[in-house]
Length: 215
Image (tube, rainbow, N blue to C red; front, side, top):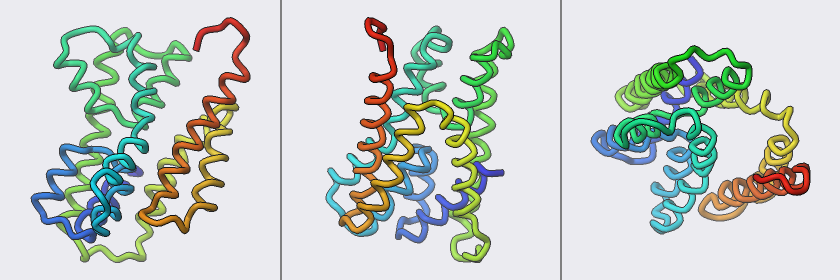
């Protein structure tokens, strides 16, 4: 339900940002990246330079590079088309659940099938919410608090990971930065917060890593 609500918020945001139905449907199906979409949409609506939009979306989605590196030992086999399909379907919730079960040794033998199935379900919930948000448009009351529901869904992923010092450092630095830099034009405060959060997490990880241990 959290993924559905987050998709619904994104679908509404696309319509309210001035995108046509075709553009909104295209972004929902091709981009499939809620946080990047929500970061880019105000910039698109405000006629920000293309390089700012692209850079913001890229930085916000840098976490998927880390996801790919973490998943490669388990899912990096098979044809290029299958790996591309799994890469497209990868989302925050399936990744966190998969890695948690992997660490516990609780995954079934068919790990690729498990990840593909979980990711496909996540994709369907997201697209259903996005399409409903696009079609319904302004018919959905703002006092439903859908944005809060989507945020809570993301928090449910972030909070358990904060038991690890690098993640906690990154979250704290990013949170403080985005508040302090809220007044920057073109929503550059979000971009700055992501960069600072990643830098803090990497620095703490390097400090805690035993000497001579590879990253």
